[in-house]
Length: 217
View: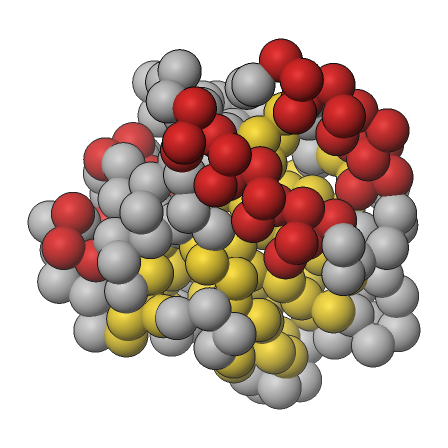
């Protein structure tokens, strides 16, 4: 079946099968958070993005073979199940180096802009975006047999960048980073997997950039 990415809390996950990587998206918790399980086809190594909530639901998808849990940013709704998932799997924890102190579970692997994170034989590039939080990160998988796949946490959604709560300086920073590190370097075909809600593409969002800048959120 064709991947659509429209998942609901309590509903089934959606699975996207790429040439080298399998992506499973599931919605969890009271804030409708998205969690993404990435599995390398060649090695079966797995990486989970945002152990947000509902640990039993996440563990049902993960099974016993989980190498790493990445937390996209420090907000509690994105790591509420982290301790339980790590205790059950022994996975190492990773997060942006400037947000690690705001996550109750210790971060074993602090990540900086431009770092590469492996999932088996697949590579994810870390991009540090400032504004929603000081240390939020985005993960980019550049499929060698397709288009890029971008896991944006709460930095980019359909219709706008992440919440900066009316802080003009924070918005300017996030808008600049989203432009320079995402829109300016990736094609329209790049698929965006946000921290909440439905997916989008850069091509669908690019025409709205001037509007976002003008409205300031």
